[in-house]
Image (cartoon, helix red, strand yellow):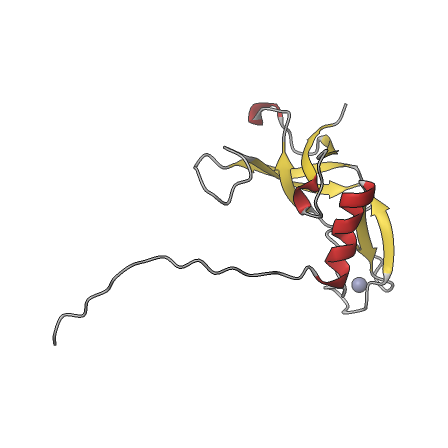
Length: 146
Ligand SMILES: [Zn+2]
């Protein structure tokens, strides 16, 4: 068989991603009101954040909206010690935060603390960015609550 040559290259693919009805409402509340919203299932009462349109447990429509947080409990955390253009900041600490009033965890950045000072189960609070654009990063990060 003859040798098959492969040439590697990169392509840029511009795209637009629709946040949809439910996530748009969530992101607009972050941007315009500094509020974190969840949706609740009318059947099992589970409160989801980020909000879901349909309950993952019982497939009911989650039509009830509620405000959760801005405080929560740090359920898990880790630090990424490698460079990546996907990271919003160098050596980010990522955490799973269960906000007060929510039943699910939100994955987000943890800041204003060194890794060694974080503890599972500690109380954290959302810090909102001064310039907000309708992105999950309108929450700058979560920090240990005072
Ligand atoms: Zn449910």
